[in-house]
Length: 305
Image: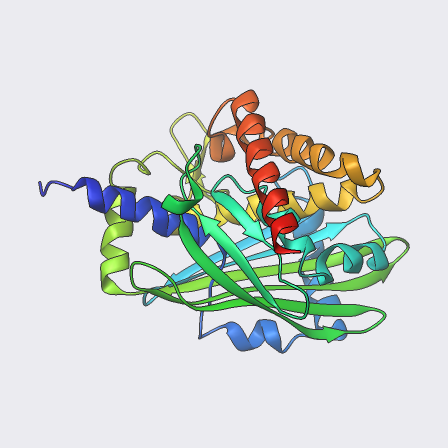
């Protein structure tokens, strides 16, 4: 069996960390960017049975796909928040750093400077790591559509490390009335042959036991068998981003100086509801790391202003 080098292992970890963030699947991108309020409401009606009856213990559907070096994950979620609140939380590019910094692989996220639209993100290991050792990813923010009942935003990067490219993160939401909203989150990336080999190396070693959420069958004891591999990684991160958005929405009503701690604690408690897929470290360690990162991010914003 061919020996996997330390470089390949580190490279694969970084690649999957980036896959956790976002990307572009050229074959399906038009479907996300071409959506509208009627389209998204039709999707809600189509998915209603799955939203009401699933294993997530919340109205959520995850879809993942992998084809020809491209990976895409889609999350559809019904949230008990009025559309105006969802729009407030997700349309502002600066607020996206509140979402992204919660992810275990995000080391830092600097919001756009005044008059600009680029978020400076650093992606690395789940445990503590200097920002200088993480991968920088500059994400261009754009607002595609905004009406009183529908909005869509995108974050894009043309290139990433290890032969990855065409990153896109798309979020759209529509008002359902009655204080409810329907959110669609889509992210994908394209990977070169070198990137695919690095990913396979990781999945054959450190990532061997990691799984996603889709059930592919049951074992001899009747226990669920979950999807693994790249699609498993996509599904884990799709859930992380949904939970980060949920945590941010829940914290908006708190006093400004309490919002970070509230969304951080809620994010941790939500992740721990799915230990098979999302548990990475003990809670106190996670909280300590994220508080240091948040303070570092706050200081960077102050220095920028």
